[in-house]
Length: 112
Length: 112
Image (cartoon, rainbow over all chains, first blue to last red):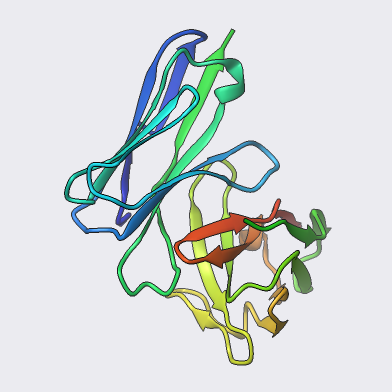
């Protein structure tokens, strides 16, 4: 059973459309990370959110951490083919000694 | 952040043999981790590589099957022992800084 429930599992959209990926849990996290992974490579850290209610923007990507620090979302505006990849959320619990709990991942495909 | 390299990048091995994967970090880190990942799926933590002491294994993973070394703060190895086709997977190492982790490019292992 995944501690972090990530949805949807798969998302296929056209270039220029918007998309949102969700990461939910019943547990509280001290921080939450979002990663993007492309085939043949390791996950690349996109952002870390640590404060409940925090919103971070990275160009066309907007990340939000829930007020209770149990959930997060990633929103991409005007998606481009370069946004294609596996998006993973990962949470660190208090006293986890640096260990992360990963969601199941969302495969995003953006077609031209 | 950190730059992490892994060797080999891929290998094809025969059933019953062992493979040692190396992970090198470009700076000293306290935490190093080893993961397994099926293509397109999420990451499963194998163990935390502790410097100067035995690795800490997650449920379902044992030292006899996945011995880990951590001789210093920049290097670790994972050995996949007595391999079977079920061990075919991508193996990733990561370096931890507080609650963030940075990943190597992975080792794609195929066992025939």
